Length: 332
Image 1 (cartoon, rainbow, N blue to C red):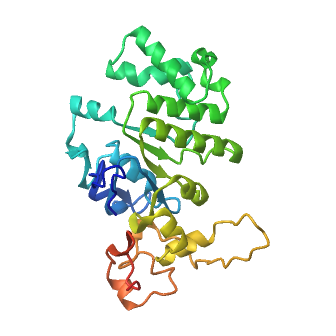
Image 2: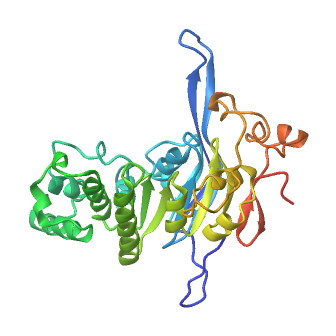
């Protein structure tokens, strides 16, 4: 799916371009075994992210969402593939060049209780990226931190507080301020609201929405909260056992899911009206062991439409119209 600048009708170039990225880990077969097996945490994933959009990444726990997000930021080394940010291969950067890239791409972590150093004040925590990058003197740093506190909805009183003096929502606001202080272009939100209660979730979601507009940010939004993803994202990518199985515009995907896994996933979204009956698709069996992924389509062991080709041949992503791509042999 290509995106067009609404003002001049010209196509935008992708801010982020991920090409055939994979990440494998070695794992022993048992505690006393010398045999090594391979866990394919991420397998041959390609996608583009355009300036100003929010791409959602959804799927069951263990499907590789977080690993993919950290590969994009070069926090993990890939087994193969490339990640282009503004046309530059992030995975080849080292030293000063990698540090320069960090100015433009940041992350907000899932757990606001473990992502902040308990020994640092809130002011020091938010200032740390500026100190590491050596971008400001003491006075400028303090001014920038106070401005970020205001942007994320915290008073200047929080400057000298410690994380234990803050609630979960306040800590996550601090994490967002820390990610924002370098004025990045891309922020990876790794389950940024999943550890918060529902009322706090809505506040943080609205904050992320507001600062995206104010700072012209691009988000990679990793989540298992499908209702949150629908509210936040312009496109959604569905993962299963390390692979992308479907990607489309948000409303297109939620109204017309095509992959059997996506259909089952979306059927579990609760409706606000309890009087409305909804057909829930119950998947049989458990998610396969990632050390021993089924041959062919990894989903075929749980798919009611599976046939012989699904067991032997891995389906490739292909366009089906309306910016919709799916990896399934059943889709014509």
